[in-house]
Length: 366
Image 1: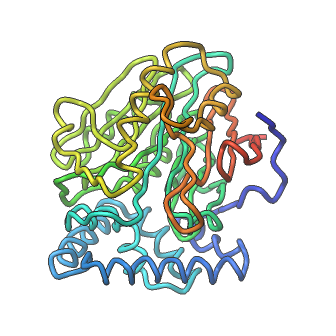
Image 2 (image 1 turned 180 degrees about the vertical axis):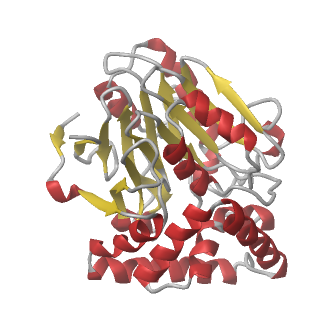
């Protein structure tokens, strides 16, 4: 693992109120501004062509928007700022954030889907870690960024987030100054409801809570749209995995937890929506089985974690799994790898395939 300290311009600073932080994404540059606009429009157009934005979907989005305006005011303010900065309709960005949910509601098969492999450990040579490979559309490769959020609403100080321009807050993962780290994975499900969208929830947790215990308590108290998992770790070494169901959540607390792209708890596993035409979802069982086998074998530091996430399948060897995926420029592939060191408040990130890209270290606080 080759690691260097990040360049000064490797992190995009977003300072101010949620609206101001959203609008400040335009400082990434004119060319990227156009790319974000086009990618957003293209993905929504594809969803419409594939029948994901019919009458039932629009009715669901209307109910979701009413809920979000009432319960997720800061998230909606940030979304409004992003819309203003990129000169996009706020409705279009709201639809864009719900494309995975709409795909589930339509039970659409095939196409590009969000993947990811994530795990956390309570202790090791570098203290508690939260680790994730981000598997997503190759079109997001050019617009993913590390953001540093700072504002009066952030109760536990600044936070580092890995996500995409045009999307709010902890769109993929993040860590706050208290040392709480949250990473997610996508899980298609058979049931959704009106409630907290996972992308809004992750930012809320980093804004409001300083520990895994407090975050889990908040999660239990909220209504959820359903779908996806969260893997959490904090500076004190508390670790948890949460599966987000539309009618309730399932929580696993242990020194070591991992999740891929299916539910595994008894309560929620039957709700997993399996799409065998998706390479991401089809490999989920293999990736989870591999992590279950390999993670308990040693104490994990940053270097070993990064090398693990660079793992490929070697021919037909059943002992290996494709954690690092290469799907081509437009298909689903591993866009990045990240390791959050909760105790030292350090983020190690590779903004490319973890097997070949350069890893950078970023300090949350000076």
